[in-house]
Length: 329
Image (cartoon, rainbow, N blue to C red; front, side):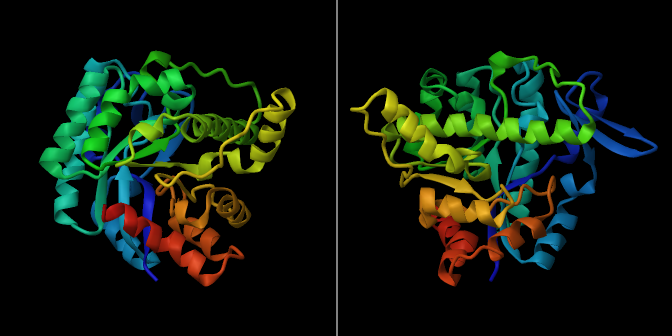
């Protein structure tokens, strides 16, 4: 069965050239040990897997992914820059993705990157990408949903998305008012730094889930869909304790269910037991594939789904059926 992957990333070659020319992070450097992408608080090994679309299509054919939804993630530190820096790079990225969606129709679907420093500029760029290129929607940082006040700032963007039946992908990343992010990590061995960072990111994703699940923010936009990266972070593991904590303090409180028909999560936690738990919490209808390629191997992401103890029909829903519903809206 061919899968549909809703969480994968791409850095356009022209954007790569702009990042190589930068003197400050975010930037790309080339050295004897290989190329590095310098994010605001860390680095990533950088290779042709990020920018060579022909290589990517061959890879998707090899591992059994029919369609991949591509985006420029916020943790790369581009979209939260001041608008005079972010917008030129974002336009280059979106323009390049538009070329590939046209060339590889049905295989590559695009989500727009947006300049977070101005809501009107975000709306303008989203309109351009949807109305000129037919993009599915956009990617947004989870830190824009750490509170209802933060989410309300984006109301004009969501209003347009609701009019056009769009899809938003909420991925780890910063708001523009957090610029510049400084590296405040402890002086730990590299392995511990990575472990702490991975867990910290998932905690912030969970906080965003509370805004989307437990407030009426999404109720205003019934015609659009949203999906959160990484199974909604640590939320499935701690939701029961969270409910007990609230109800112990406020006995008359009634916590809403952890399911919304227009809110999905993807499987980029990359673990079969976590996917099983998420199916219990969110419902099997609300989970789509997320491989987080090329940061992680797509084989790892697909294997995690196939290694679950879910029945064959449930696995098919995650691998393909739920995503088809989102793509055909």
